Image 1 (spheres, rainbow, N blue to C red):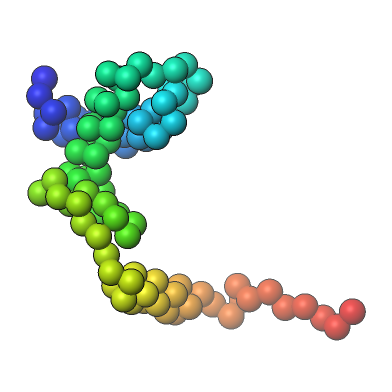
Image 2: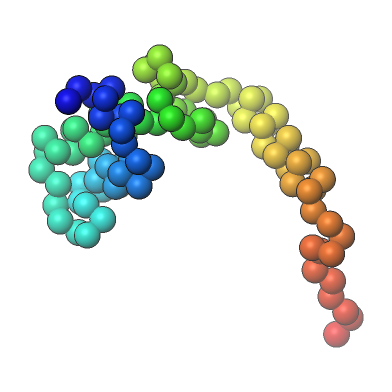
Length: 101
């Protein structure tokens, strides 16, 4: 099976396991990952991220396999919009109110 076929058939849970193994050098159960497995896990997790995830991280792998970096102004704009959207979606009932103690 080639890399792209593996990524197309991979579930999100499989991606999370591979990402964890690549980042920590261990499987989630605590078993140590061999170096060859770790390299494969890194490659597969990056390919999955590029193919399936629309990440809001400042640095990620794009669909073309290239590293994508967001500028500080792009991140500020993104977070500002997310904050505005969050405020628009909240009702006044969601606000905590405290009495004078």
